[in-house]
Length: 246
Ligand SMILES: O=C1O[C@H](COP(=O)(O)O)[C@@H](O)[C@H](O)[C@H]1O
Image (cartoon, rainbow, N blue to C red; front, side, top):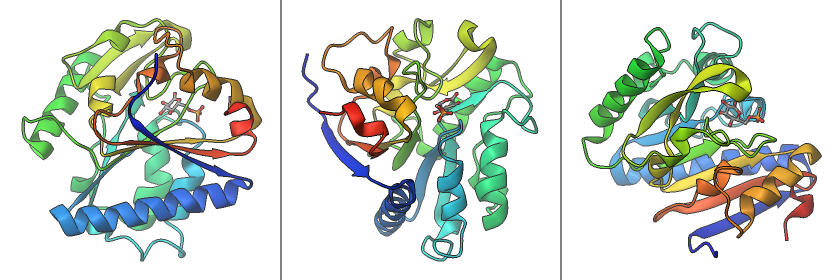
C-alpha cells in the first residue's frame, strides 16, 4: 500500500549538523506560527535521542532566536513514574530545556502521573481541549523518536491503543516494558502541521526501514501509523541511521 502524505527526508553526515538543522526548523516554524496565531505549540518526545536537541535549543546559539514566552510545550508520551523519576520524559525536558530557558509553568503541559494512568490520560485530553477548544487539535510540531522495536511515542507493538480511534490521549500497561504509559493516540498525532522524527545511530537503521515500508503491518511496526492527514512528515536522520533508506 502506498502512502499519500507528504514526506521530507533530511539526512546529515554529522549528528551535530542534524541537530542544528532540526533546531533551525523549529526556530523557523515558531516564527511562522507566532506571526499567524500568536503562539506556537511544540510536542516533545522522550527517550535518549532528543536530550541533545533540547540542550541545543537552550544554548546561547539558539536561546534568543525563539520567542519562548509564546511557546507552549506538550508531551507525546510519558512513562508512568513520578515526574521526579529519572525515567520521566518531563524531568528530562525540565533539566535540558525548561529550567535553562526559565519557561513559565503555565506554558508546560505535563502528563500528571500523580493520578491513575486512566485519569492522567483523561486529564491530559481536557488540558488539550482547554488549549485548542473541542475541535481536533493541530499541533504546530510534534517531535517523535523511534524505538528499536519500531514503537513511537508510547505506541508499542501489539497493544490495544494502536487501534484507538476516538480518544486523543490513552493509557495502557505495556507488557514489553512492564510499565504503564500515557500517550497521544495516532489519529491526534496525524493532525499535526509537522511531525518530525529525530533518529540517529546505526542501531536504528532497520527500525527506520520497517517504519517507512509500504508494506503495512501496524501491529508489528506501530510507527507506520504516523501518516499526517494534512501536514508534513519529516525524517531527521544521520547517515548511519539512514543506511537502509532507499
Ligand atoms: O520510550 C520512549 O521511546 C521512544 C524512543 O526513544 P529512544 O530512547 O529510542 O530515542 C521515545 O520517542 C518516547 O518518547 C519514549 O517515551
